[in-house]
Image: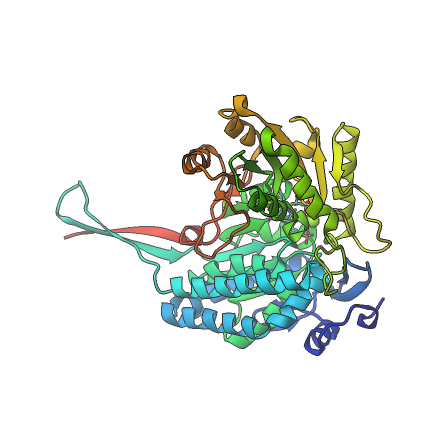
Length: 500
Ligand code: NAP
Ligand code: MG
């Protein structure tokens, strides 16, 4: 096993944390896997092993569920005053903020993303999510209703926590995805079992320590590291879980739905995308070039809402595609912790093989490589150059399937097809996000209405805020994360009627 001394320099606290013996967090205690098994965590910039983490399996899952069940049925958390719950969530936000640098280093080391990106995107958004939901804890209300059955009744609704929630997250924004899941569920008074992604467990394990420090009662939050089949599947199927919230691939999303069928637990899903980006001829071209580049290349294209189908009006097609390609070709590939890094490695060898396979399939199907291509030129690490494909056709795999890497298909359209462009943009099984680039207000809003997607950005892309609901139409998911909408996902509504 390679040690951290062969790794890029990280600060003392980060190195100290990494070198600890890592445990699952169950019922307020840090415990090894029941089987004693552990698995390796890799640095995607080098392929070296960073450390080992416990491999949770069905019995660990069961213990975590029983702890969460007890904490929900008998413990103080759902019964606590909402302002007290909010205060503990706010304290957790403060603790995370105080450890921003350490978390940013862990994300970069584990996921491969540039340290600067983790600092300015993942961390502030995570802290903000906990603060925003801390505020909601005391503002979850029912309503009073006037019944047509007559004036002799008084009716009102109660919003109650849904219960024990299983949460399963991916590796693209490890800490932020944990925050998107934990913060609203906890604000609503639920108790949680969170399974981290096998590729990126480090920031979630550090988060467990801060959760312990923040003063959550035992069993309210339980955090496990393990594999999808060994830990995720028994968690999604567990009879004592009331709800499962999943983010990841559409394929695994379907498995979650099947697993949930046993006790008909509630399900919310945040799945894949193939988001269209539409650039009209009247767009501010410089803004469109930099904006559509970051729409696809941000986080190495490992975003469910990555703008991977770039529709450009033919009058500005060459200018925009050349501009995006220039940005692609000049992007500095380096390990995330290297100060020169503009784009780090993909998260894993598996993801690297998958993305390179898509680029090769596009080429085999007749697409032209306008920038990038399948060879990174780097000897070590899972690097893929930002890639622009042209001359694609609608049926190609690269146009239809989610690549989850820095690969964009640029597709021209002309004046005659203006009415058709929304239809073409909607020609996907996914419906997560889209962006529209134009200076014409009317075009912008008309197209925004026509797009079948949970998020539409106008003259921007990848703008996130804890207050903005996020989720998918069609096969991109069920339900919404963030905003006030997510509270529906973690509460039950009870109608109470009194005969006066
Ligand atoms: P994935 O397999 O869907 O993994 C997401 C999470 O689900 C991980 O924690 C995973 O565990 C777990 N999981 C896997 N199989 C499971 C099962 N049978 N039951 C319960 N949980 C299970 O995604 P991936 O393998 O990491 O990435 C594959 C593709 O998914 C990507 O290429 C991309 O297209 C898509 N993706 C989408 C998003 C998004 O935000 N919408 C995020 C990530 C990936 P492990 O720890 O074993 O992985
Ligand atoms: Mg997987």
